[in-house]
Length: 339
Image (cartoon, rainbow, N blue to C red; front, side, top):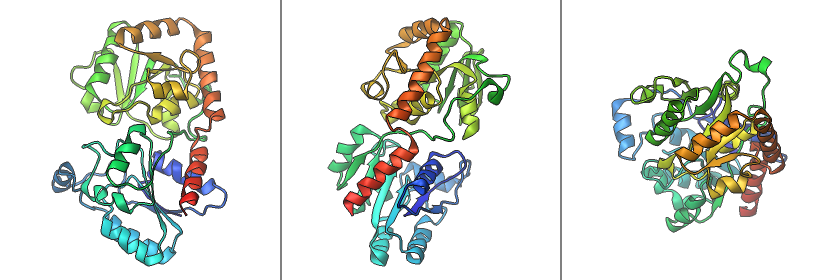
């Protein structure tokens, strides 16, 4: 398997690649995109992305064709690249006729995510993995022959319970911790929590977005990745999980990672959350801001219940096969069925 992705340290793409490396019967070869997490593109590149015709700044198409020609893999697995062209896939098929696989962790059909190059490749993929239940039908309606739902996952090495000694002096220093991208609805809910007197810590990849309109008591820091992400989630007694409205989320990667760390999680109540975790036993679901405040207040007064929630949630993630290793096995079975 030739695995094509941005694999910067702490990325979920790297976690998936490492899981494939551990999968029996699979030889996973990295084809890492040069672009890193904090790469800065030109103004022209940003304009073209807004038009949904992203510029291939890292020559992904040319490099991928060269790699396939040299390695002759059985499977070419493209993880969430938005610049791969249909002509590239046609060249790859002509080279060694591998199984072509695409993976999207996002709402790939959403207008803010779907690039025209990927839209034009829809009919070429042999397997198309999505983590969004609603995308399965939407992809099929747009010409994808074999869309397959694959669940969100956690990394066994990274997402685990940590001790006070490992985390340091800020272990559970705050009442609540949230890590994620800025959205106005998220800020409004977190503001309500701060106004209710709770101490809140936010980690975000875009901390400047939180500068205006955020309650002054809320602490905002740069996002963390890998083991530092896990340690950061231990800085709060309770982990908050807000779904991203722009992505039409009903569940997200953090919905699985936080429970896998053994953190007592309070999250928006959805059918998909309830399908993966038992409400009141493995996570606490809330339906509106008033409900959120009431449940946070109750949970903060009960140390034993918070401990039990974390233990139960961790056990559920392990028993139900939510790890990247388990998901890699699922994907390999689906690819082999296609073959």
